Amino acid sequence: MDGPPVITLADASVGYGTEVVLHGLTFAVNQGEIFIIAGGSGCGKSTLLKTFITLLQPLAGEITVDGTPLRSASDDAVGGLRRRIGVMYQSGALFGGLSLLENVRLPLEEFTSLSGDALDAVAYAKLALVGLAGDANKLPSTISGGMQKRVAVARALALDPPIVFLDEPTAGLDPSTSAAFDEMIVDLNKLLGTTFVVVTHELPSIFRIAHRMVILDHACAGVGGIGSPQALRDECRVEAVQAFLNRRPVRAAQ
Image (cartoon, rainbow, N blue to C red; front, side, top):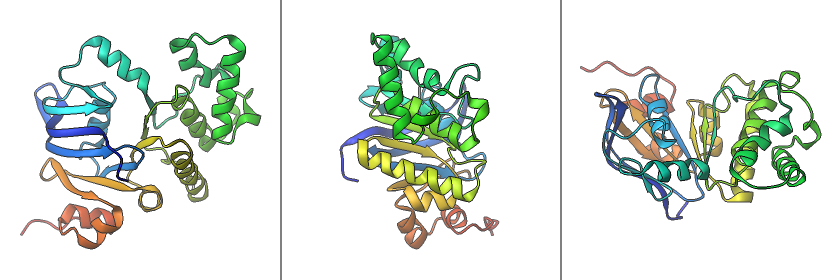
């Protein structure tokens, strides 16, 4: 995708307190693309995601999300950014005592002045986008895990954010349900033009949905490769990248 950057990293370091997990991060996520963050266990995927969604601050360098520089942003600017991004957590994080419609309504109730009927109308529309308008009055406990994840995507889309972050969205799903979820993300990306940033290690999903991806390398605590999955598989000679995309162990250093 060749849209303008909506996320940029310039020699950025991320981590916890004085513990640097990743450093030297320099790349961009472009408007309207499905961008994957991947890599082996413990490579820093979750740390980077938490930084993007403002749960952590960059330790060095600069990360800008939708025009907001995260290291220097005021509390008001960070609050504004949080209203402009959507997040789907791995578990779905639905409220069990609320119906699917009520779960999707939550961000609308908090951040808009819509009336009750308008809130319902928008929430129904978002559930329709993920194929669940007919299930609006059900409780989360009465639907499948795959459906719960779809509701979480609907809620992430409630405020029409330009960027949506998905954390391990197909983890725990069977292959057929995973494939259907992937198709939904591709369709939403085409329909809405939303930028999706997806943390996943599931190779079938990566090759099915990604425009580009970054593979994080635990060995160098940074970027192993960035590009389309196909180009990285065929052209990148970094061991961590080849091991990940070809599903084989990392060879020990000689």
